[in-house]
Image (cartoon, rainbow, N blue to C red):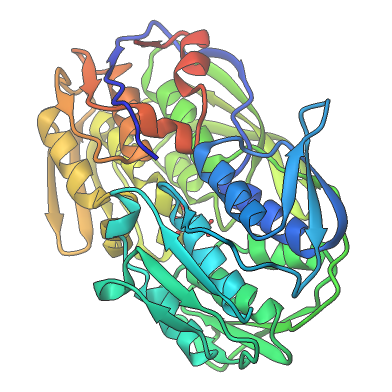
Length: 443
Ligand code: S3P
């Protein structure tokens, strides 16, 4: 997919005020389409994220015989084909910018006796896929790709997949999910062991559709997840809550903009996703969960946030998995805080939509924010004042780098420009319009 660059400029805002519904959770939306597709019958999905990444998942599924579309009320329907029911796609699957679509679908198609070709945009074609091909090879799946398993890549599926026990070498929900989704059409029990817990939407939703999953702890106290293969999944309704990773941007904007008072509605606060909110509270942020409730197995709340004086904190590596996508915007908050914020365990940021550690560092430099990278640690020194800003930021096809530095510009001394806001549509359609409705000035 080719994008016309969309330069944007973010100017000092008076305050960020009002109520906001951010779009549906990206992780849950991908899984709702995929698992709805594997169920028998028609699934209804309310609140699906209609961002480019998720639309790419829907398109890829339709190439394999899973049809989906919108209902009159804006909800989505997915006509499931049942476990084992996918068809060989007659063309390459192009997943655009979306690593989640690619890695999960590589797993899903691995246990079918046909070959599937995957490609993506310039960012996705740089990302490592070996983390997925290694366990899938153990299940009997073959691959032809570029070095480090990068796209374009062919998945040579197997009609007699082997159920494995796989200990994840990295804390990655995408890798965990790829193995479990391959295990879906595999006779026997597929087992994944996690070094640290990662987002569990795949497991929760598999159970929601009727799969049997059993959980245990091994003797080192690690999570052991057993999926009983070839279940009959039955269509179910799904309500997708708002994405806590998207909500982090308006929440951060309100925290740093004087006079702000914002309510973000219906946000997923699954503890395995909520590390950012825990961290900003430790920084002194006035962030409160209101009206906590459960929705389709996920914990949900409205988040009330007010402008706050922030202080630097230490963010331990053990929290990284629960806020892995929020470090770019946390780094912006750290630039406004008084004192040093030390973020440990960030090696995974090197292999996101961009090398996020490098892009955060160059953006902070451009905005005159003192910082340092030491190995896997990012250290940001704030002095409790608004950073200078006045910078042109390179975003490297990365939606979260783009949104983070637009947030910076709302409260820095001088405006912040980004080279391309078009990738924001991968995860947060109408980000600029919604933010401007609350008092932001992004144009
Ligand atoms: C995701 C998992 C995370 C996250 C990504 C979405 C998912 O990636 O960064 O945005 O939906 O499973 P990793 O599994 O690579 O950590």
